[in-house]
Image (cartoon, rainbow, N blue to C red):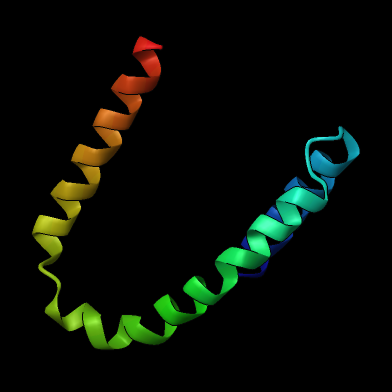
Length: 73
């Protein structure tokens, strides 16, 4: 967990240094924080209801469609 935190922070610093991270991105991130908190709070209650096999294939399908969309652009 500490490694990922350090990695994300270094990415943000690098983006800031090259001018690709500023106040607008910080505001957008702050707007998303309540949803992240709600998701973290609800996850333990929802996780037992999720079919893991179906979720895995759904995530793979969405990723494949996204990749193909990016490749065709």
